[in-house]
Length: 161
Image (cartoon, rainbow, N blue to C red):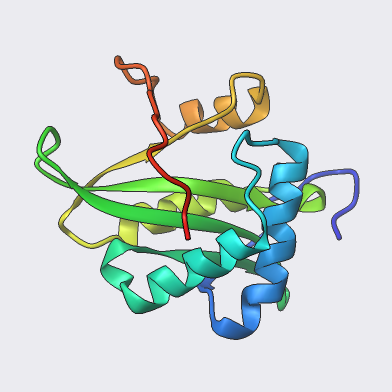
């Protein structure tokens, strides 16, 4: 745990493994406790997401953030081809850092690592942020993300199995 005086720390990033699933599920629950979703995703969603990426790594993956041997955050990344961008876009579907480690440079380091080590076919990063999450908005803007011209629409056609 960091002191109240935030400092930059050096985290490492790795792919989630099956043994990480209980901890990942807890962190996902923490994210949605802080920032509720109308979809109300539960542990089964996280398990299915992990299995989907394990069986189809071309679709994306889950990265864990570690500091001094402890998992302190995660990101769920989804990859797809975009005609508009002429290559793969990586959607950062979820990003979470434990509260005690926020503001210490972990997310910034993660995005730098993601850009530097992504597949050469990847041409853009995309993410969503809740309108009221000012700290995340400032971070993303500082990292070069810009609000898209188009609005985001969703129509659910069925519930996942």
